[in-house]
Length: 101
Image (cartoon, rainbow, N blue to C red; front, side, top):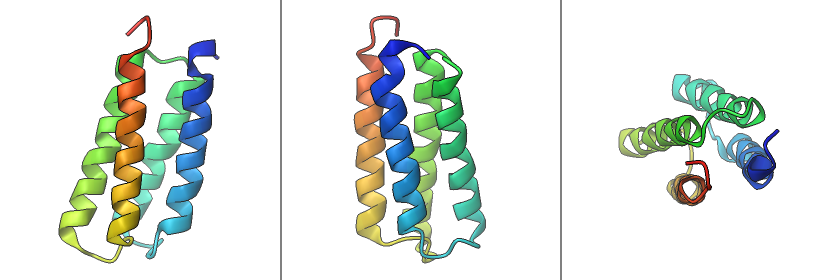
């Protein structure tokens, strides 16, 4: 793995575990989609995908979190959703600062 990705890899794994912890309805189709995207994000980082490709995956996750927030379908608590969304935004900002962005 690219050494620049080490911190992002740890952050992605941490957020993956947090997502699993905060999901209220694990059988919800949106929960399944979010878990898949987050798993693919970890795979993208491990596979040394370009920072732009990783950022695109982060944006998809953020869009799904926003959609879940607006649907209000009990997927997760609003505050947990906000925390995850902001954490992914921090990751996205960090990716844009990589030297090979």
